[in-house]
Amino acid sequence: METVQLKKEPPLGWIYLNRPDKLNAINEQLMKDLRQAVDELVADDQIRVIIITGQGKAFSAGADISQFKTLNGLTAWEFAKKGRELMDYIENLPKPTIAMINGYALGGGLELAMACDIRIAAEEAQVGLPEITLGIYPGFGGTQRLIRLIGKGKAMEMMMTGDRIPAREAERLGLVNKVVPLTELEKETRNFAIKLAEKPPVALKLIKLLVNQGLDIPILAGLNMESLGWGVVFSTEDAKEGVNAFFEKRKPNFKGS
Image 1: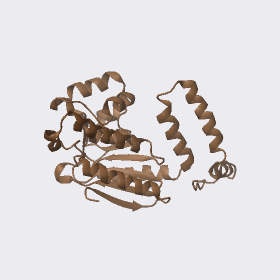
Image 2: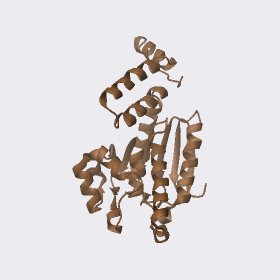
Image 3: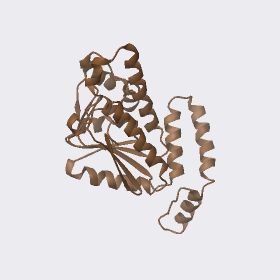
Image 4: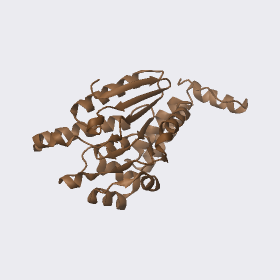
């Protein structure tokens, strides 16, 4: 893959955005490579958690602005649609995803991070949606995901001003789950990912489905989905293992079946 590096470290899979000279700006090739890398990790039964990060000093500084001069109304819509569909795909993966934000996560970079389940950032990182400064607005799902993460008021402020905010402020707002020094970022992310990897995969998959789909349906429908899913999860060997481990006072060994 030209713009992405892939590392398998079962049970973890690492994806590195690899355009450091361009601050990992997102172009069509990177979107294609990222989709290919994600597909490979999803298909690998040994991989339980997927981590996305950037090479160099940025997670991703957003969409590659050098492409914008050639866009017209139709091609801009197609580019935004392609990017948004990739973010939708990542958000709804059957495996947990973590964005390891090592530096700037701006524009499409923040939209990619928001599509992940968990965001862990370095203290030095900055996040924001600065598209308004270019005369446009977020097009990869940012207008919808940001408001769901931090509420309308602050989301409107961030999008209307285009201001960047430091990692600690993002953590306070709930946009980032955890902030650590850059020197501890990979270790902290790895430890968190291992913790998730030890959990029952089917239950994790159902949690993602219920939370992501439940946001957009009436609460009664969501509650009914939850009850049905609870029945499904009780048909797994992992549920039996979890209950048995509890009574035997030992750590469960979940296998994803």
